[in-house]
Image (tube, rainbow over all chains, first blue to last red):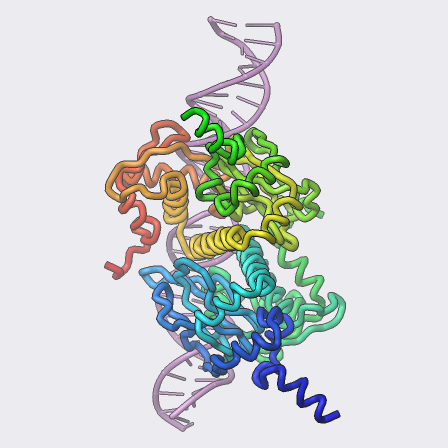
Length: 251
Length: 251
DNA sequence: CGTTTTTTTGAGCAGGATCAAGCAGCGTGG
DNA sequence: CCACGCTGCTTGATCCTGCTCAAAAAAACG
């Protein structure tokens, strides 16, 4: 039994055995042989909060990376210092944009982040071989596009309170995708207030005020500054697209 | 000579011969044989302003389509009627999102639009055969993602005047991609004021006011309500990321 | 503990929304 | 041909949400 197991395991690189990216991530499309080949060039790494993971344009670091744990924020910034977070990435997303032309976006660790990185060239080679992997990549890109567009609606048309509610729903849905609307959900915010502000197109002051606003309306509880509990996801969802202030005739 | 030409043309479907999508669009990846096969199921159509081209989710219309001319707007809307344009598509973009899961976006003709449509199944079959076509599609998706993220910065962090300047730049760059910064550029706006407002997260009144604002600052001229002339694209670009009101120390 | 960073709270201001007219272009029908 | 209604655009007056500026409280860190 042990023997058989050894043989089985020998087909799969040790580094990949417990990796989430092998199931839901892009690596899931690879054969055992391909995984071995890829793993030869693989390095795992850990990065602290606010570490820059990829520079814009230049792409000096010639690597892609799977996110093993933690949250990565993608930010754009203007010459005068204003900045906007344009996307968040969670495990097991792939960071580094294969085939992207010029994405002037900076990727930073929002929390502590563990990465599994490998050279561009190796991954691109595998993409040639495996249409399935290319498809997974395309799907991730489409999912990111869909999220970005949802966020356009949020930034363009929602009030501050609705924005914050939308943000909390986004985080909750990523940290616990299958969570039922009914049950209480509790989690740690992966972003600090100023990051949330940069994500919502607000100031930290407004984020703080709206946080107490939602708390007073009974939509959430603050156990710690960072740890929140949401008693009713459905109610929060309603709050994310309905502003009591401008509550007109819409039922 | 005529004979030779006939043979040559017979390799390529007549409907495709003058089509822009064959060069810059996804069809450019197809062989003559594939073009013939695709063209068998192809129908060209014309749609007037504000016609809905695709319903959300349902995707009842089981077709994709290349845009031959005109501008298509992609809008999201909220239960209470607020709406946001989350993307614009120009020739020779492909509309209909192959492989997209659930994109609750409505595609409407912003101007008169000419389409070249074909059944989903045929295109998806071709995608299997032609990795090059799949790659082109992926690149279009990445380009749309990049645009969406640029727009997140615009919606989240720019003033009304900067937003309008950004919009005009976007239109100009799509209608005349290679236009030099120095030369005067003149074009017809493909969107009416209320559409521009929905694209910028503003009201029509504010769009109108900012239009006169930019005009008074000499950044544009209004020949007709719809036809504008921009004397200096560079100046407009500067105005798109620098607000004179909050002009601080940033040189 | 002192120092720095993060978060909250308060007072006043302003950019853009809202509400309300007025105007210009345009197709329709008398 | 012009009165009429319709839609799209502009302009004005007023209001309110979220920003700015300022300061203090609460954590985080060495």
